[in-house]
Image 1 (cartoon, rainbow, N blue to C red):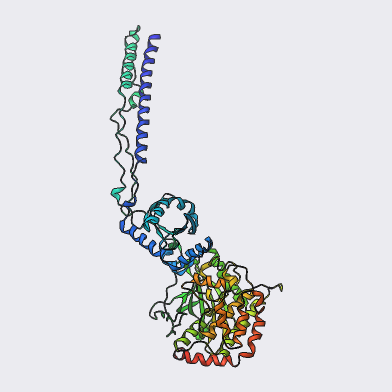
Image 2 (image 1 turned 90 degrees about the vertical axis):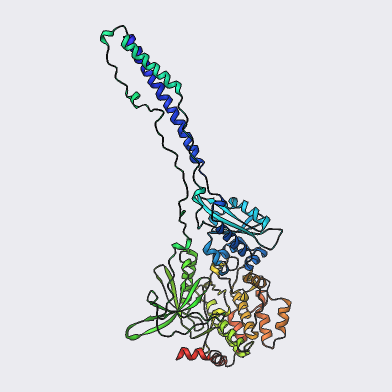
Length: 601
């Protein structure tokens, strides 16, 4: 019995030794496979399309030459303002559409961002490119963010060499790196199995069998079955799976632009007969929609003519029809599609519609309807047969005129003051003052009808206290020429800020010239923050009375030295308005005779 047990023990020990040896071999092979997988080649900068890298580097150089961006750096504007510039300004739109993120780096630190969620990660990953760009003016390369590849380019702004301002742009690659450059290296051969343990296994198994066969009780020899472990033991020739090489496919990963998730804009098509082209502040005639195209509808409104767009919305002439051929024309303002998913922009648009609809006054453009069609927000306003004051002044200048006659200029200012007096004194349902401040009293927001009526429009930012320091949805653009110093500095404002803006508007009407301006909006903003200069006040001083006296008070740097209410300012103008309404009507008839004829034909 003892001999038989010894034989069995030898066989079991041999099989166990073989199993342990095999497991060690498998472990070594797995480690080799892991090392091979970890050594898969990753795409280098040279693996990407060279032309694509040169292209984004070229665009970074162009971005570095943008004057408003340079002005923002010179003025040391805050991070919120820079972010809003990247998110909303028209001059940054091409880069906003193409690039996922943007960074402005000054003195080695990130001071302005777009897509701020990645600031920390990108702040470390883009340093090599920034260092190279700082030496040679521009550079490009690739980085990985969250496991995804991005191409970046940096360029040095040609200003303030001591602070070395840099613009960094980044987006996903449009062209995948070449597949031949990302194939894994050959998998290493499997570690050889050590022969000694298996030789010993064979010897032990044979010895055990010998003991069982030739032991002291041969008459009772029993067939020794082959243990299942021996049958299942692998040989050195057993195949193992090769490590899988991860590589870019022939077309690369599919990257999607942020705007792809946004609803498409309404096609610009024409319905109706011969709509009249409307003119923008720049004097350019907006294209009339193609009358042969399909009808473009937004809710129950047919879009007839596209008037233009601003930082927040697009404007259309729209028509709504009823029974028995009834129809009425409106100006339809639609929130820009790319802003429809931004909560702040939507909330502001809704607030504008709600507030302006509540302001019912003969000198305020009324809002009649507000709605949502699909994912598009819109409001409809009164369609005024006329032009805005900016376009009127431009046409007046084209016809050889400079400033308007005093009675016309005073009448326009007086009518706007009637609107402001009403808005400033408006109370809520509980009888408490709402503290409304328009904040955008400018030539583009004053409508003048062909019959001489004057109306104030666009109350979209009346409750925003973040104007200037944060250019929310582009609201600063184009308006700094008519801004009070306290507003331009980002301080709290009240109704007297609107009265200062009205003073600038009156000066524009009387002289045909802006009191202050710059090569771009930010330089103009800097002028506005400092207020009228000594030379500005001197030029006002030589104007005929009562214009000189009225403007000096209206444009006082200290709000306490200005007219304190719109009613007080209006009373100062009232004796001088004369037959202003009829004079404006006659002037409009002369300036826009051809267009009036087409529109009324």
